[in-house]
Amino acid sequence: IQSTITLNNGTVIPQVGLGVFQTPDGDTTVNAVQTALEAGYRHIDTAMIYRNEASVGEGIRRSGVPREDIFLTTKLWNDDIRSHRAKDAFQESLDRLGLDYVDLYLIHWPADGWQQAWDDMQEIYASGRAKAIGVSNFHEHHLADLLANSDVTPAADQIESSPQFPNQPLIDAVQAKGIAAEAWSPLGGTGGSLLGNPALAEIGAKYGKSPAQVAIRWHIQRGVVVLPKSTHAERIRQNLDVFDFTLSEADMAAVSALDTGRRNGSDPDNFAF
Ligand code: A2P
Image (tube, rainbow, N blue to C red; front, side, top):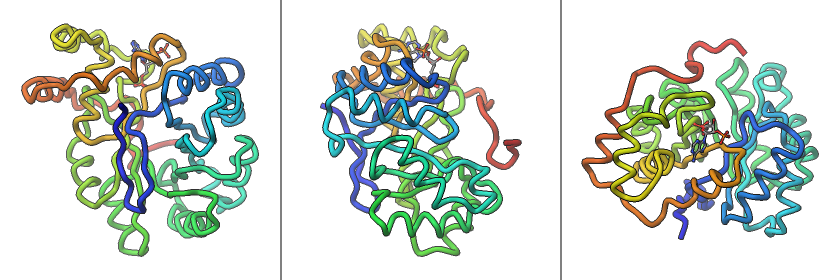
């Protein structure tokens, strides 16, 4: 049985979703999405800038899983924020996906102009074509700015978090505001060394689980929505097989202690794209 989180507008989000950043457009993405849905995933996380929305839509259709059973997220890219194209960009995403709504639409980064984008997203939400709206890569000060100028609290803030960079103070602050925290690069990202860390293997051995499964379970037990990426069918399936064990408090702390203080990606206060 998968776990879910209820967002602040009543929408329910499955806690584990397939991430498709750096999943190449075409068959690779179609197959990853179809494999995930057939394995029981009901949550896919993409973005305009991943350039694979059309393949995500195709994978959804090929899976045969009813649209209404799937939670789909996409994101508004920075160029479209800066040029105040939120509404057009959203429709373009829907067209590429071949869908008439998404479940969650996020401001991808706090690029200049995001305040107007947030107003536009509220109109998109009111139109029913996004069932929830939120942000990504927002620090506490961005959220404070947003909340001081809007009556609408974002449903989610998707941020970098993994055992090597837990980002725990931000996650605590986000959750305290009733905003769901979502983790990107939850396994330490492409080419990362986290999954080779012997501490994760040692903990996993106690439960008969892999390092990736330990990391995913750690996210779940922190109340975080976790978006592991893989293009390999076996790993995609493995990453959802995390609901039959519970990490002890000591093991949760041991995973948190892998914090290196180093991000895998950009700091939202200093990004160059
Ligand atoms: P691959 O797509 O080749 O399977 P993140 O989700 O933090 O971005 O990290 C994903 C990275 O971890 C990818 O490089 C992915 O590679 C790899 N990965 C995902 N799931 C597993 C797993 N269960 N075991 C080992 N590596 C995994």
